[in-house]
Length: 355
Image 1 (cartoon, rainbow, N blue to C red):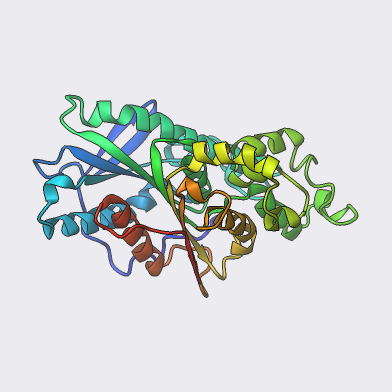
Image 2 (cartoon, rainbow, N blue to C red):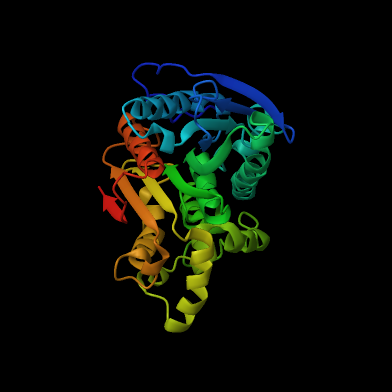
């Protein structure tokens, strides 16, 4: 089943191209953008990892790579201290079971489209993508800078839809990635998929009293999947998996629980930056399914929060009237965020929320 490309309307016109080269790294076709544009005296390089949406391929991320690199290179041209700034490259690859790696097309589909293992397939795919990102991050320098003539000193990730889910995993679990742009993705897989099960009218959801009370641990959302979610999903890792409970999002952890969560969050998010961009009219990944966990996290990292010492920056912006897509304004915000992360003279970013 074809699904609209979330990037279909992102660019009013094609951005100017930059160089691209393809490498086979760990058996994965890996595209690297912007190598030829690095200035001769630049030794330190930032790498932007681009993770594509479900049912798409890495090719759809090319205009994002062009835009980000062109904007950054233009910015560097007008700086006097260009020698102190990093160059920027971007990397894309096909997610598991997509594009050059596709094995079973049905496994990429939803419950409504006939995939009975939608929950397992989607989580394992984007969790695998985050692991692939870490694998490629380790070996990329040996392919593109084999003489150690340059060094990758900063890693950022930008993911859209399925790639956005994966970007949450990357920022939580890969210590070398220090900033993430999540576009129409969700940090709370259980909440997202429980709502999707309701909309899909799954019997495992609807035929319980109250509806949904027996969904977790059912054949459509097995207990072993729940265990994986509690290890790797941001909300699952921090709050555990519960069936429909709202109170967990609105209560600060007990002092005892804070003693567990503080080192956990320090390890996974300490001093990192996150931008979350959502469509206010998104029906596939509704912001309402992300908002409770984001609200919990914002409260924790706020100036008077119980984890304020973690120095986590979270910028959360909802675009009114935008559906499941990356709008042109989302691209502008993403590029602004990337440039602020890379430019040491940019004003420090505090946790904020915009509607």
